[in-house]
Amino acid sequence: MRPEAPIRVLVAEDQSFMRIALRRIIEAEGDMQVVGEARNGIEAVALANQLKPDLVTMDVEMPEMGGLEACQRILAEVSPKPAIVMVSAFTQEGAQATIRALRLGAVDFLSKSSLHVATDLAQIDAELRPKLRAWARRGVAVAPLAVAPAVEFARRHGWIPDLLLIGASTGGPQALTALLKALGPVAPPIVIALHMPEFFTASFAEILGQDTGCTVREGSHREKLAPGVVTLLPGGKDGVIGPAAGGGYELRLVKIDASFHPNADALFESAAMIAARPVGIVLTGMGEDGARGATALRRKQAPILVQEPTTCIVGGMPEAVIAAVPEAVVRSLDGIADLLRFWLG
Image 1 (cartoon, rainbow, N blue to C red):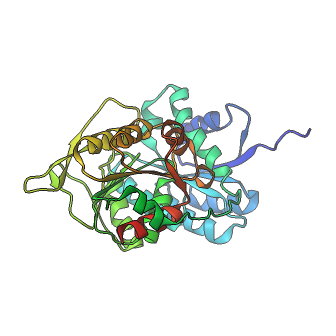
Image 2 (image 1 turned 90 degrees about the horizontal axis):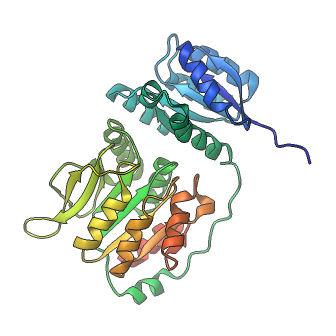
C-alpha cells in the first residue's frame, strides 16, 4: 500500500528563530512537511500561489505586507484554497487582527505567547499539530443529518429552557457563528465557554454579534444574564452561574484549576446546581471538557445537545459527552438550531 502523502504546510513568519521552531514542530512526526517559508506577506502570497500548500501558518505582524492582507489575497487568488491558521501576538492589537482574519476566512489561530514562553516543544506540539491535522481533514464531505421531530422531543421533556449553555473549542468560532445565525435571537440567556486566550473574546463577541444578528457581549463579573443576550466568557477566565438579586441568573468570574479556559465543565456544573431549566450544548473541540459538566446537568434531567462528531472540525468534546451521557441528543448544527427554535416556540 502506498504511504499517505504528508500534509504540505507553508510557514509565514518574519522571525527566523520562530520559523525554525515551527518547522521542527510541524515536521516532528513525519506526517507534515514544510514546503516553504515566507518572511513577509508578499512572499507568503507568492509562495502560496506557486506551491499550493494544504495549510498556511500565518503571522499577523510582518513587514511589507501583514498577515491580514496576505490572508485575504491567498484566499482570493489560490485554488484550491489552503486552510490558514493565524499565529498571533498575545496583545489586544494582535487579537483584533486575528479575529478579523477569521472573519475573512482564516480557520483558526494560535497565540504566539505560547511559542515564546514554552521551551518544551511537546507543549507547543500539543496545541499546534492537532489543529493543523484537523483542518487538513476538513474537506471530507458530510451528509446533513435528518432532524428528529423537535416538537415531540420538547413535549417529552415538558419544560421551556430558561438558560442555554454552550461549550466549544477548536472550530468553535465557525460553529458558533453558524449555530447562532441559524437559531436567531431567542428569549433565554445564552452563555458560551469557548476555549480562547485573554484579549481575543472581546473582538470575537463584537464580530459574532455583527455576523449573527444576535446581541453578543463579553461577560463581566456579577453581570446579570439578560433575556435574549449571548454572553461570551472572557478569554483565559472561567465563569459560573449564580442567582441574581431580584430573580434570574448572574455570571460570576472565577479561575479554576483546569487545562482549558474558559472551562465548560465549571459553567455546566454551576448551572446544574442553580438553574431551573438549563440546556447544555457541546460543539466541536478537542479534549473532554464538557463531559463532566454534561453529566451533572443530566442528573437534574436537563437535556444535552451535542454536535454530530462527523460534522466537527475536531470531534473530541462531543464524543466525550456522548460516552458520558448516552441519552444526549446528537444533531448537526442546523439540527440543534431547529430543535431549539421549535422547543422555544
